[in-house]
Length: 74
Image 1 (tube, one colour):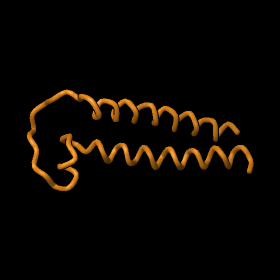
Image 2 (image 1 turned 45 degrees about the vertical axis):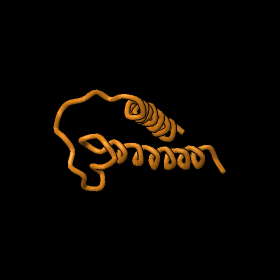
Image 3 (image 1 turned 120 degrees about the vertical axis):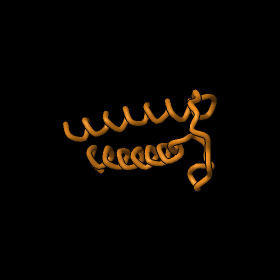
Image 4 (image 1 turned 90 degrees about the vertical axis):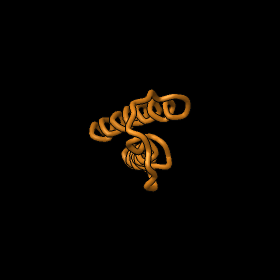
């Protein structure tokens, strides 16, 4: 496998993880809303796992962009 093939495989894997992370952060917060649950519309801060998932998604997106730039350069 060449370097570009390895970068492409990692890029696909990171993309799948990013998709999963975004789906878990469904608008309205809480896993109940993903499956049609009714939630309040009040503003609240991210805490615990939600904050970790949010920050992890940002880091994954930065890695994804970095891999994309590296794949174009090679």
